[in-house]
Length: 265
Image (tube, rainbow, N blue to C red; front, side, top):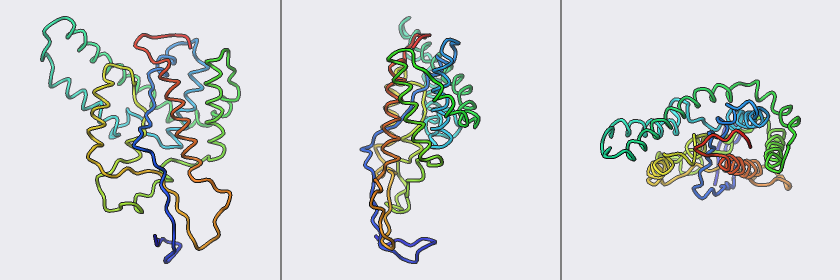
């Protein structure tokens, strides 16, 4: 395409897009919340805290307790649905127990979100990211996985200290007139859990919200032909590494995400 910007009157360019195949990059926090309540898990809690701080403050991944965020709206909708259907179909003790579990889950995720959000927004944790990660020492194979993951996050931060995911989004280049689009702040987010009593309802709500939108704002790379290209430049190196790390983080958190509180890793 031919592109015009504040530096160029008109220049021939190639725009490449990273195909995300409509994947969702959601990070569960319930495991982290449970660890933060246990004094024995201070080391792993701090390790995850600095990772969360980096993802929220630098990469710009929204937190579910932020007013106006996509995931906050989903939980508000769930809460509203529960309020509107109160006492409907509560015919036996099993139904009442299930409704109580839903109410308890909403209460806990709201309470935890109110505590976690100011922590991961605190710039002090981002400033301590390197020291926390380099001082962490694993005690077993499971903790080694966390240590290696944290080191990879630190290397990404060192190489791209100010790079956010939004830096690679250029919605004005591809389908600029399309208003119905899945934004970066919707397919990336912190959320409560993938294994709680709302897992099916939440996924169904998100799928319904996305299925009518024809465009997804995926990372794009723009190459201008008014200068010689960088021969050693890799397409989407930051994004590919980031998404891989987010998936590893999600899988590790999910591995310890249970309804019951487990005080040890």
